[in-house]
Image (cartoon, rainbow, N blue to C red; front, side, top):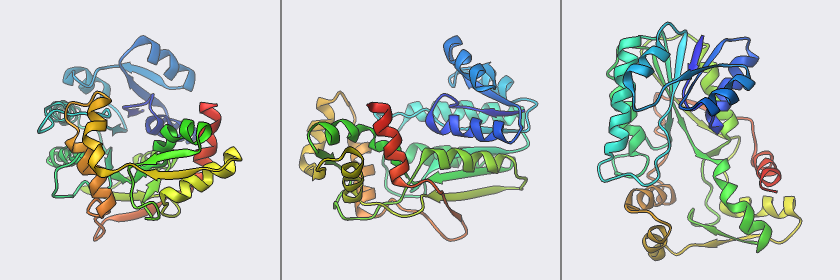
Length: 288
């Protein structure tokens, strides 16, 4: 059996779906009975465990053919990322004890960046898990196309979509979560030794203006992007409830300035097959 954390999220669901379609038994790590029922309906076995409980994670990971791990998203971390560091330590302790034959981890574009930013949490994950004597594969995924879910309502209602990705004609590496999940699942079905890094983006790079143009076709109305001025970011994020917006600001700066990019070199570069229009069509249908 393969075990998947984050199985109720977009990437985790895609991992589960791909493994099930390959005829594999799948265990889904979930926190609640409600999520357990949803996983059972998918056709996988629920494994109750919390990411804050290393012993429960160890039990879930033991005796498996492979494990997919990811950190829960944390968009407003405390300084120096103590929350992520604790979760990573829990994962490392559980994996060290369970000794699964292979581990695939969801990481991110720019995990190698020297500048501290929101994605540093996944750099910490890579660094700590890399000390394990296990076959490890890190999927460094590009910006998720599904982040445009926040753009559906303003595109539909006003035709004006605020953009933190700038300039508006810059081509950014993006990828669909379905491709991230299917890539992770395929890696679980492979055999290798040591540490692997797989850098994953979509079929082509995408600009904010292309996102607006795609929304315009799907919604049959004029849609354009509007730059959110950089000087307003801190106050805006704080007004939305963030206590420590600087990591998020630095992440956006890194993407815009280009120092959050793929590392290249000896990394395995792959491209997904899902295009932007497919993703935005699904988002528009879901949001209504």
